[in-house]
Length: 62
Image (cartoon, rainbow, N blue to C red):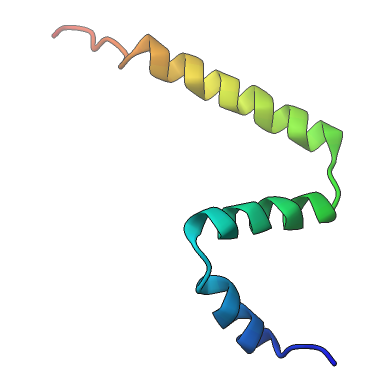
C-alpha cells in the first residue's frame, strides 16, 4: 500500500531541517547524475566565488 503524496509531504515537512536536507541529498543521488552538468555547475560556482572575492567593480569617474 502506498502513502498518498499529500500525507507523505506533510510528514516530510514535519522533519527537522537537518533531516530534510539529508533526505534531499539522498533523493538527488537516487536520480543519477550527469558528469558534464556537475562540471559546468562547479565551474560556474568557482567563477562566482572569484567574482565575489574580487569585490565590486570599480566605477570609472568616481
